[in-house]
Image (cartoon, one colour):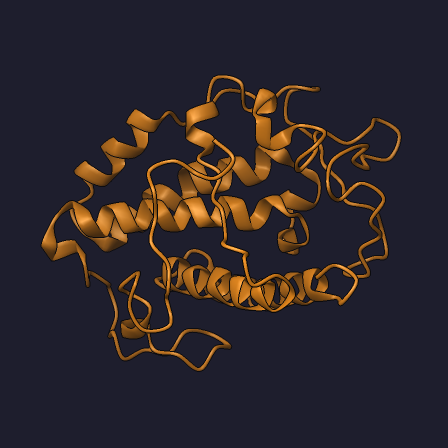
Length: 228
């Protein structure tokens, strides 16, 4: 996918429409469809591919020590001289978009990442939210933003989809929405605009993105990710 330019393509789409898909009602449905499109492309390269998620909240006390950030998986922090990652699956890649550069990361506490949201805090967000708008704001401005900014570098920019961590992170964000939807029946189709609304760029209605396991959303979630 890298050599075929797909990392650059997804990063470009995410950056181009950033303001329409963040801080708006589209945040959850748009990103759900986005990672579905990623998986659809990935299976053309390997029919066995299934998009994993990274439940970073289970690593909240020592995020930098997560196996996901290990040298044989997605790699760790960037080096001090230029912030380029020095190990992991994307080591040595030059991303054409946005600036023909290496993959960069800049942890928010030296070579560590400050502790953040625990699994219990996410459960609390699900249970306390009175409606979709409140839930969306809690998660987007909370654990979603914090992880992007804690990893830093490219993950902290609008073109963050160039980092392989992006899809793992957003698959987890989508899983949390799925848990909210299944917490009680009233949440399943809860949305603060018309379900007939089409999401930005993609020719698909919100109502067709609401139910995991139906239509084009041919996946379900297990309680622990592939990397856990």
